[in-house]
Length: 349
Picture 1: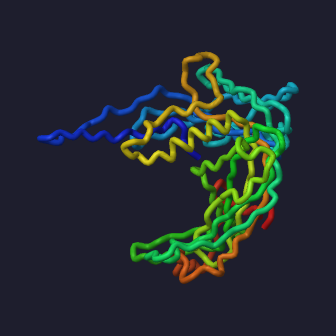
Picture 2: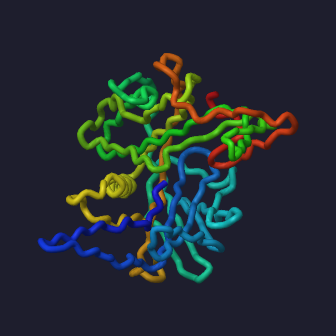
C-alpha cells in the first residue's frame, strides 16, 4: 500500500542563454505525523490497524513504527474493542472472534499514543457490497515484441450490478496464490540456485499493494457494471494462475481519499504535472487540531470470489524466474505464515 507522508521531490531545471547552473533544492521537511492504515468490514476478523509516524524527508526515509498506543474500534451501539499490539510493534489487531462489522452501522477509531496525544476518525457507515456476478479473462498479445512472453498475458474482468440508490462507491483488490514446493533458495557465486523443499503444503502470496482501482455509480446508477478491469496476469508459467477478487463497497469519503491517492501516484514527473499534494484522510488529532494526520479508517462491505486462469495457450516460452538447479537432499524448510506466504489452503482452491 502507498505510504502516506512520503512525497517526491520536484525536479527543477534552470536554463540560461550563457550557462547552466546546477540547482540544489532544499530538503523537504515535515513535522512527525501519524499515519493510520486499516478498516473494519462485514467479514470475520481479525481487523488490522497499522500506525506509523513520518520521519524527516530524505530519499532513504522510512516511516517509524508507532508503538505502545491504545487503539479502540467503537460502533454506534456502544460496543467497543481494544486492539492488541503485535510484535515487533506498530500493528494492532482485534480478536478473531471479537467485534465484527455489520452493514448499516457506524464505526469509529480512537487512538491514544504513549506520549498522551489523542486521535479519532470520523464515524463511517458500513455499506453493503453487491455480489460479484461474473469473473472472466481474455488473452491479448502485443505484436512485434522483442520478448514475446512479456508482450502477452490475460486481462481479468468483473461484472456486477449497481444498486438502484445513488451514491455507491467501489474499490477492487486481488490476491494471487501460487502453490510452491521449494521454500528456501540460495544462489551461489557461480549462479547455481540450490533449493530446499517445503515441510508442508505452501502457497506464495502476491498482492497489488500500489493499485488503486476505484469507481462510482455517478454515471451508471442502478445499471450493470460490465468488464470492470481487475488485473493483468503475466505469462511467467504455463501452470494455472489462481486469483481471489475482492469487491469493496466504500464510503464517499474513502472514495475521495483513494481518488486523491491515485492522482498523486499517476503523476509521471513531467513538466506539466501537478505538484505533489497532501492527501488528507478522516483522522484528526483531538488534542492538537492543527497537527497533520494521514491515512484513512474505513468501514467496508465486501464480496469475494475466485478465478483460475488457464495459461497453457501462451505462445513460446514463459518469462519464468531462474529455475532451481540443485536440491538439498536432506531436510526441509518451514512454510512461514505471513503476508507473502501461507501453509493454509486458499478458500476456493
